[in-house]
Length: 254
Image (tube, rainbow, N blue to C red; front, top):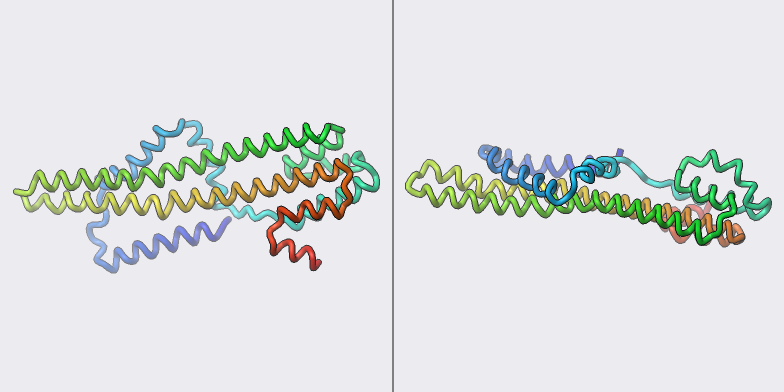
């Protein structure tokens, strides 16, 4: 579980609702305003994206709340060990270790290398896997970005509706408050949905995608370097290009 995401959502809600309560709290719940802003933005998102794609993003959304920190050091050591064994005993020496690889992408790549497929084919197929992963994830990013854009827009629509209601009933002072509440609260709800939920989750998902893409590229370059017969030192140098600086320093001092 990614504690940062949970803490961020909780802290944002605590601050906002604490400020509301300290200011009186009454009048901040308005069902028509919620219907316009939340219902309208969700409906617009459904129009923008096919329903199967929206349902299919649930697995991607979990990445915003799951702790997916990659163990670059362990991956570095595993590929380095494979490089040493392949250089000493040949690629076929890795065949018994392939079944023990947990990562499907890495397992597929090493299996293709052990089977003697050319580097161009391995590179093309694994890069296609990476591209397909990016495409799937970008749909999830797009859904939350769209929700973040639609929510303030429907907030403005609600503001206009509230103002129209208020102006139509100027001769009835009791209705002015309701119209003004809808006008202001829809803008508030739109801003909260966009900036406390939709856009932060979209940003977190983009970071997760970048991390996963970097790990896959690290694996791909390691496999190609081993298949080309590069020395273990050269393989390690290529792997280090994808490792965060702090982890790189820890590996150097180990």
